[in-house]
Length: 470
Image (tube, rainbow, N blue to C red; front, side, top):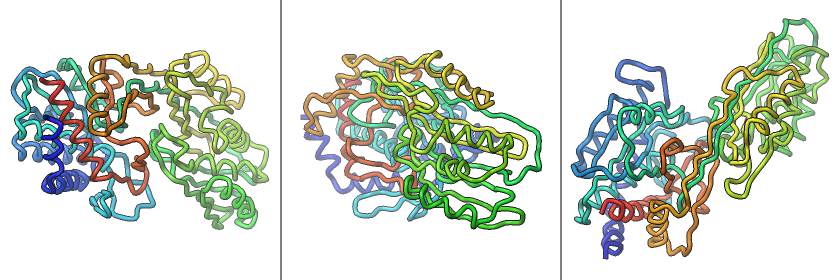
């Protein structure tokens, strides 16, 4: 049986070594998006990762193509293409708090650590080695599976949009960039930028500056503020209560004319804001409790604290909290802020369910902000929820492959807040690579992947490719 042959293939210690080696090669490239350069539309890091991945694919005997440096293509064979597997090589920034070098793949007690081991370089390698297994085992296929290696998933997916603007969709598509068993619903997005401006003032005490966050789809792990007219002794007594409530850590130091406040939180994926410690929201709690002068920046700080209180990751205070049975509840991550002497700009990342619409989400948000003199300046549009029918042939086949190797019975497709490459692809679903109950620490420090889980995923992918391309 194919199932037994596939299991024996990946249970060979040589496959384990091959998996670790492949993941290590890709993790070793810092592939965070940078400024575009000739031949590198998303910066030198993603381009270097693309080169390395295509080199790896070619070494394994596959036909490869660099598609204008946006994506790479790796084909199982030269037959008509039935299946696209979409993975990405770019990563979010490392942030802080790592116990190891984030760009060196470290194995310890069966776990791999490094930026990208779970999102999405490890899953890419699982899919690649699954294609190799189909070939090595001589599993009968009459169609082609194409692994598409993207380079901009974390920053807007311009890469995959570029490819599909020029090439047709495959009859079936999955991305190994989320969770098992199968994800058939991806929430929509509402990610507005908002702000206000005001005249410079000499009023004291006042917040003269604030910054926080580094990426919209990451819970901000750090935030800092400068307050003129106060000393550390005025601020420090207010911090322990917020620390106890949030888990954030504050550092308060005197400076000329005032005080600096640094807040250390914990990053996490914006789709799972409860997993992080939002440093911006925690810092706002302290700032809102200070005896500040009656001026514009003080009113804005108070308004932001009221609308985005620490721990409110559902948008209740903003008036947009909602949920439905099919796609779940809205989640919200206050992601970025910059405040100066004359104004501020901020952005949140909300993942919205099917029941969300212009009136009860974007409209309600705009009305709440306006009560505090804040306006939406950019990105006020809402993106659609992606839905694939649970009984579609692709979903049914993938669930059967998952059940075959996990022993799970009657597995059901699920909905997530994260958005993947298939969000705009008709009929596309997310399939793996994380198993229920495993925390990959995605977008956080010490991102991890289980070697055993990657090998199990590769078995599932091999069977799926064989059945879909038969």
